[in-house]
Amino acid sequence: MAARYVLKIVTDFASAHTLRDYPGACARMHGHNWKVETEVLATGLDELGMGIDFRHVKQATREIAQRLDHRYLNELEPFDRINPTAENIAAYFYQELSARLNDDRIRVHAVTLWETERACVRYSEDES
Image 1: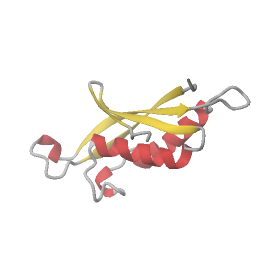
Image 2: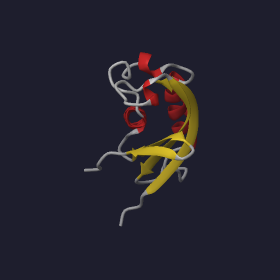
Image 3: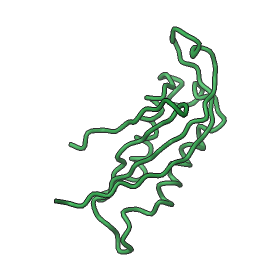
Image 4: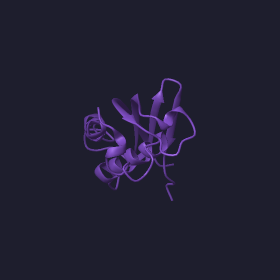
């Protein structure tokens, strides 16, 4: 059986959003202190014995979070067109991180976005 290593880092950011057409209070502007968990799958190790340096995963995740930090998400691409739901934000992180980190040995495995301490969404894609 082939080796598989799942590495995870956690970072956070704060931002506001409005859920368009939502039938409730979230249709008004409100904010969250979001927590982002990035999971990266390594199918092998490098010459140092690492799947990927945690530093690289942290840096990529923080750079994306920094674009959203202390911003009104509805004014930013792609959330000026799609609703900035937790699901869409998690998918956004996944796609952006995949473009930066994926190679022949490393794949973004999942992104979990915590909206509150008690509510989160985990986004991943089929490995096929």
